[in-house]
Structures are given as structure tokens and as C-alpha cells.
Length: 125
View (cartoon, one colour):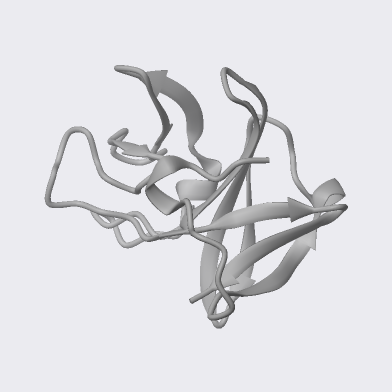
């Protein structure tokens, strides 16, 4: 499984991968939320994209409302980018880098994430 371009990392020893959940905890083409160091992370498993199976990790807190709802958003594609639509104000965030299409000042944190067998691992950098 390859990482999105914006979070692709070179292999080096300073990256520490941590298991966040199991593959069976994910829902295809939808979001689930996990805890990472006291922060909510929305995970999106897209099993059938143009580049193959992908998983994304993005902050769950909507920057406009402050509510932890991004994991409940609708996954789609706009202008060639995979996006998540916030369920409250409907703004679209790129899954690859967390940038907002409608409001450039809004940004969600993203983390490198991968499958390691059945484990879903997130990079602690």
C-alpha cells in the first residue's frame, strides 16, 4: 500500500510506527475515529482507488465548528482529489494533505498511515 504523495515518507530510523487499530475495525469507503495521544484521528479506508487500496488519517475536528465530526463526513472526489466533506458546513478537505478546497485558511492535520498485515499503523514523527 502506498502513502498519499503529501505524506509519503522516506524510510528512515527516526519514524516510529504505532498500531492504531486493526484492519477489521475499518469500514470501507467510510470513516472511523481512533485516539492518538489524546487526539481524535479519522481513518478512511478506500479499498478501490485508481492507485489501489489506500488508507488516510486526518484530524477529526472540523476547524469551522470545532466539533469532532470529520469521521462522519462523506468521501468523494473533486477536481481529481480524494476529499472528505464535513457533515456540518460541507467544506471539502483533501485526504492527502488536509487542505480545504473552499477555505484555504482551513487545514486539517494528516498523518502517514499504512497497513502492516492486519494492523493499521500511524507514524509518530
